[in-house]
Length: 167
Image 1 (tube, rainbow, N blue to C red):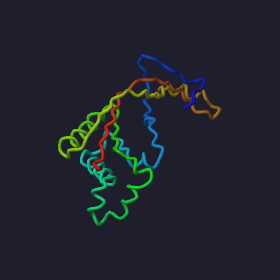
Image 2 (image 1 turned 135 degrees about the vertical axis):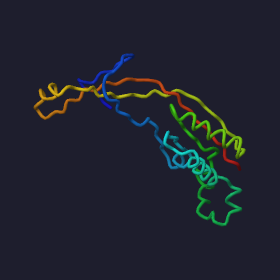
Image 3 (image 1 turned 120 degrees about the vertical axis):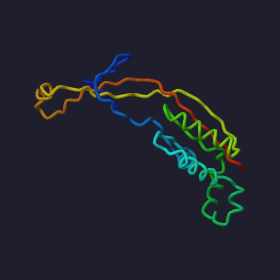
Image 4 (image 1 turned 120 degrees about the horizontal axis):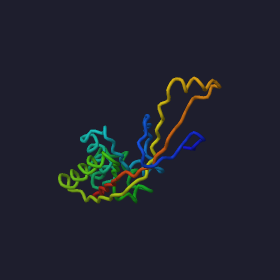
């Protein structure tokens, strides 16, 4: 996001305007990371998250591959860069921390996986669009849209749960 002449960075004052939500800057770079990282959202159902994480763990479990006759396509997860995978990562920020912790406890207590929990703080940038009266909007007749954005940095709690693959 680049700032323009109308953009302001503000600290610690109440902003009257509309909050524009942006997704967190979480980049999943490689195919291996894509297969081993699960991002928890507030709308993610708990049971669906458990099933998806369990499927990911089963892909990398060697004992499941040798005992299951339907696992022909899953042998690719035992070779190359996938061989280095030791754990599945579950990430949550803000209000999804509780759901990520519930998943960690479920895999630890019920399914007996080794689980590590790492907490951190992430800096995020909020954008607010100020509400402009109609009279002020009519003054801009040159085709430019009146866009006065205010940006605010804040810290959000984050959690990373590592669920170790049984090998």
